[in-house]
Image 1 (tube, rainbow, N blue to C red):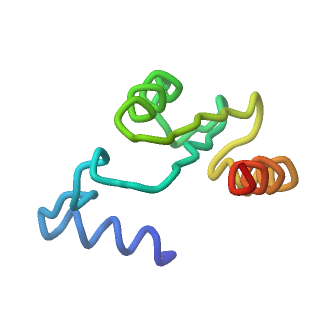
Image 2 (image 1 turned 90 degrees about the horizontal axis):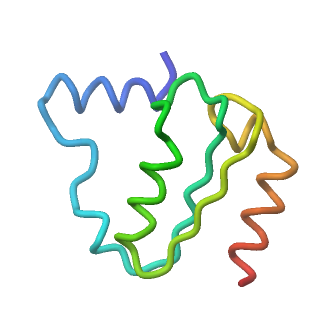
Length: 89
């Protein structure tokens, strides 16, 4: 089991929330990056990301047309470019 899965399982076993603070409290730019073909995410991923984007002061959404989970691994080159562009702006 990888560390990410262990952390999620530990939260679930302890009855802890996945996020400890509301998204609205973040004060840094956020890039919501995903893939439309991600089999681990909900089918309404874009809608969910758009709702979260509205909650933060400086958010952006980018969804790859192809790729699976995680999007930044299955679309590594383009994800690196998107992240670099996001940071530079």
